[in-house]
Image (cartoon, rainbow, N blue to C red; front, side, top):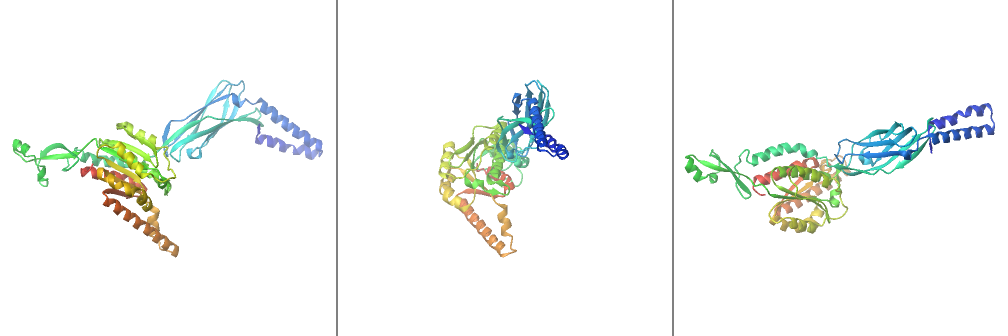
Length: 430
């Protein structure tokens, strides 16, 4: 049983008879009266366990978007239920007002809605639903907390989708809708057109020219149905916070944008999240089903506080790829992590596949490099400058092994990686 402010107010009213008749018996009598009134009021309240509770939430919602948790209450008792309902969720579920007053006659049902705006991706779990049933006077209440398990999967925000239309326009130019004069390994014949000044003479089709009595050139387009393998590093380095979010969140944005673009280009996409074992994978999915499958698979992926097993990653890649493909590694350019783990094994991989390494740069490092106001800031600037030089040296060593490197700020990583993909496709390197 719980008491309310009304019981406290009733108790405070007892000061009047105590002042008029300052006898201990009066104090005790008033206290007994208040206790009896609260007990009777609680006894007349509807039993909260006789109220059936059902909670429903959507299966998924995107990060920062709003959704609803709906609780359906059915009064199976013979008394009117005057309820205070608390819909409890994890703090990261972003609950709004989660306490609701409900007047529920016998045999009827009511719904209450709690608005949710999640602040973290992954699975957000619903906690207990607490029912507090008040008596007719409102002096006391009976309370019970019920386990009503629910799970809301919060998908990545995919804020980088705003860059998709411009990249698709460039893809259409490469894809032959606007003919381009690109010829080399990994391209397909598209069409014939009349020669114009500036065209490569090596693209002239002499047989077609002889038939049509005008100079005709061949146009080419990048091949379709290429393999793109994207590896998301989920080791300890992906847990580093860049701004307000961990590094892995910016990497997931890059995975989604590149996958959407490559899928529209007709390429086959495989994605694995790996540290010392595979945490998530999506393979054999294409078309409109690809992005939902990726978002659902990557939503619960969190960094693991362990070192990445890069030989195991390379073995997993070779197991999945039987022909030349584009391999994208979303990891870090931290010198210690690259030199001790990735660098020894990535060279042979680059001989068989086109390899791109994409890393998130920390904007705070650039800010530290520009500060010179005090002795402490000078030391910080020197440390930041040294960090940048080490990253530049690692980048040079990777490029010497034939690896494309994309190093960009969190908001720029996804579009920069998409641009790199388009450049490789235009050059016939896929």
